[in-house]
Length: 406
Picture 1 (cartoon, rainbow, N blue to C red):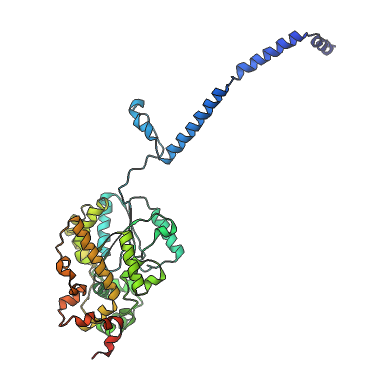
Picture 2: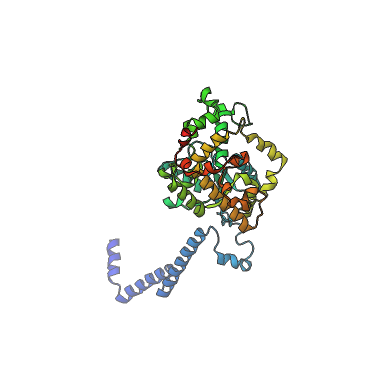
């Protein structure tokens, strides 16, 4: 009954009463839900887009937008003081990525000792690889090493005995290269005796590096090795310096003009400096000029008594000079090495001249343009009776031509 009476009461409502009730409901909804015009909607969307763009710009730049930083004085000094997110990266000096693909027995241990002191002083990341006997890499090994190098926090200096790596070939940013070489025969002799007898750091140092070397090989006379054409004293073993600058191409390992010219091109295009060990102090001075954020004050460290005491331990022991006849043969076999060394020496002296650095080395004087300057320093020091056989093309073309000579 009660339900029936209520339903009949609803049926008796007039249209005006129904309209009035609907209007009250609509007014309640309008109060709870604000009205938006098309202009208000456009304003909200524009604000949202601006916020998104600002946020993206903020993240890409690693900190607050520059426009906010410019008007910071109007916003108050504490505007960003409580910001706990990533700070804007500091401006790094150029270059901030340096690779020293050091050539064996060219003073690299001395330079690495200097770099350790410099890294602590100038706060750059020094990564020195412990891999000494793997200079040639497969394609995958090259890519992995390049990625590892470029992942080092900048500024960094990476050093390892490794042939030149072409980063741009794999679309990776190319770092700046530096290196030091020395007279090829001097380098060969230093390596020959170091492998057998080590250096002053310890009497058993050589046994650690060449534990499998037999005594007849360890005590092999250097003249016998050269004159009897042992593998260690002939090509391709003697073709050592050029591949460090030629690169990872298989043809870079073959003594010839192709590898030589490619090495020269890489030096001109990718190396900031290639110095010569015979003028090490000048090399350090140029590095200080060209890379002050790495090598500032390097000479003061190099000349300090503490460093000399430590650096003298890297000298090879039991090293002696072969006979003039053996040196002549060795020079003939290393013609590409000497072509490259003379090229580097000329480029190094040219750079010193451009910067205005006067050299104290006699090798960089005007006499270096003479024909005798192409000879190794050991041959010049021995003052051989004649230099003509050394420059004879027949001797250079045939590595075994000395066997036919009396």
